[in-house]
Length: 404
Ligand code: AMP
Ligand code: GLY
Image 1 (cartoon, rainbow, N blue to C red):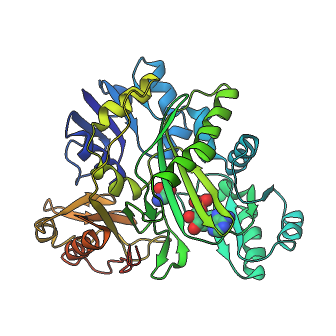
Image 2 (image 1 turned 90 degrees about the horizontal axis):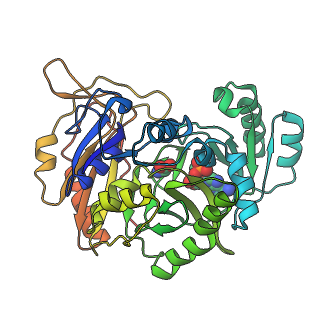
């Protein structure tokens, strides 16, 4: 098969790498670090299967346009992608589906929003209704910060129109888990679970980012936990989408928190997670292209299979990420890093310098992945690789998977 992966980040690099085990792959637009990248728009590429990586083109209807042109596409249409495009709508759908999730209300005006905040106990959780690249969530112990957050979101000052409706949620506490399920319109099958590290700082401190590292497998999530997530969270949501006439063929990514009263849904994303994909897909031993093509065609016929090996990824970000990343620095040490046994590097925010070397061109610049027989061994390999890579001001967390 010829597969076209749409997107330009570390997730798309990992998708392309794993798909290429069995298929020909192009990545549109990709980046200078991803082999097979092409500047051609997806609409003008002739491929047997399209796999759309990021949420923004899905919310914008790219999968619908490609399907209308007769292509086989893995990724929901704009109707299903609204699960990620509007958190208020997602909350309404999952409530109708009976999925356990944090209590919430949504607001467009400051006074009732603040009045609702004052009825809650910390941590206070405030989210933009619309897309904000994983950065639109404020979690704070301080009621004052929560009040001023609400005002900044609703005024449009913090996140533009994405914040003009806010969702305020009950604050949950506990370890998080990402379960990515592949859906064929009526049935969901889970991939191996992963844990992501969302905060910029070690010890889970500082602001939320798109994700600073991840690992898979996750000890707290054995088969019975994953089966429970599919049967109580993902499948009921897919069934609710069917009831609403939505034919959802793509990833339903359940972000969960394991609270004292059991697992609770934090959010659904409508795509593969980044950086979860970089640790989940390399562990796949069955054919990814076949799975995604079957889901895209409306019938998954074979369950995915995974190696017992573990993979850990560490994100290397540019100075100033997530608010104002510095770009244009030459990335050193790539050859030494990729020479470390068990290391793979997936490129995200990179560009090409005048001499052909790779330079930083975005917030999350690259992922160094380490593979090993268990999480601790994989972690050692990942950090051995990461320590070889350098540019001025490089930011990375040193505690990814430290307690796994
Ligand atoms: P989201 O974009 O909805 O995944 O939120 C990003 C991160 O914010 C999550 O991974 C959690 O760490 C945190 N978060 C979101 N919702 C809640 C909540 N209700 N309680 C506590 N933390 C949350
Ligand atoms: N790693 C979190 C996300 O992909 O949204």
